[in-house]
Image 1 (cartoon, rainbow, N blue to C red):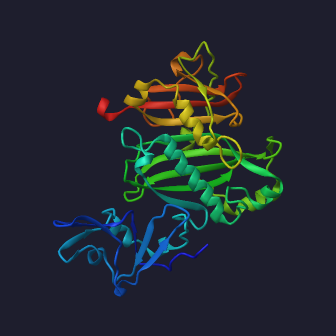
Image 2 (image 1 turned 60 degrees about the horizontal axis):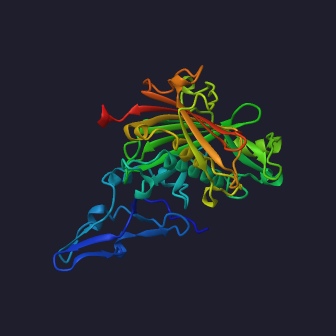
Image 3 (image 1 turned 90 degrees about the horizontal axis):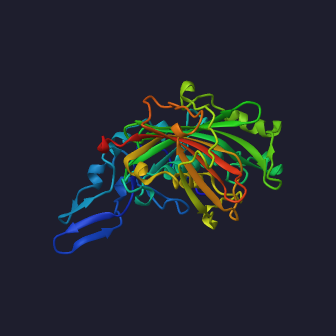
Length: 385
C-alpha cells in the first residue's frame, strides 16, 4: 500500500473534472493543470472511490486555481466551505489513510468521510436508511483494519482468525435527526468498548462534515461466532487483550435514550401487513457466507404501508438479530403498528414522541423461525404537516 502525502496546509478534494464553458466550443472537460509553484501532491486511490485528493501549500490558494485562462472560466467542484477546513490545525491532517479516514482522540476514535452519491438516495433526494447503515458498516471495518489488529481486513483479529471466529451483531439502535441530501458530505465517528462479559459495544456519531451538526447516532452490541460450526463463542482472554488498547468508554446515545425495551413477537393474528416470498440473492451475501445485516432493513420495510414510507420519515430503529440467513432461505416480512401488539407500549427513544411506531418481524417462510425483530418510529415529514 502506498503511503499518503506529507502533512499539508490545505486539502481540496475534487469530485469530478474541471468544467470549461466556452461560447464557441460549448462545454469541455479537462484535467486540472497545476503549475510548479503550487507544490501539488496528488494521491489517487485505485481501490476505493477513485476520487482525486489534491493537497497544496500556502502558496497555492483556491483563488489561484479557480480563475480564467484564455477567457474560459474554470469552475472547480469544491464545497464552498472547503476554505474553512483549510485553516484547521495541521494535526488534523495526520494519520490519514487511503480509505479517507483518520484517527481522532489519539487512536480511540476513527473518523471517515462520505460524499452522498446520486445512487445512494431515495425518491425524496435524501439518503436511505440502508445507505446510512452501509456508511456505519464501512467505517467499522476500516477502523478495525487501520487499528492494525485485523487479520483479514474484515474485522477479525489475529487471535480470532486462529480460533476461526467472526463478528456477528446482535442488536443495533439508530436515531436519525435528519437525512443527508444528494451532494452533501458527512463524517462518521466510530469506537468500541467492552459490553458485559462476552460482548463488544460499538457506537457511531454521524455529523455534517462542514457544519458539524449531529444528524444521526447509533449503538450496537456484537459477539463472536465460529465460522465453521456457526455457533456463538465466548470472547477468549487472548482476543480481549488484542482489543483492550482500543477500548473507549463513551456513549453515542445517552443512557436514558438507549432502547432496552423488549420487542414483542408478531404473530399472524397481530400482524397488519405481510410480504411473502422474500428471496436472498447472491449479492445479498457477505464474506462470512451469510446475508449481510444491512440487507435485512430493506426486507423489513417491504411490509410497511406505502403511505407511511411516502408521508413519514423514520427517526428511530432498533433491530434484534436472532439467527443468520443464507441464500437458500425463503423469507417473509410482517409488520404492525405497535398499538395492535399486546404489551408493546411506545418507546419514546428520541426527544419528541413519534407520530407512528411499528413492530416488525422477519422470519423463515416454511418453519416460521425468527431472523430479526425490529421496532421503528416515524415522524410526519415537514412538507406534510
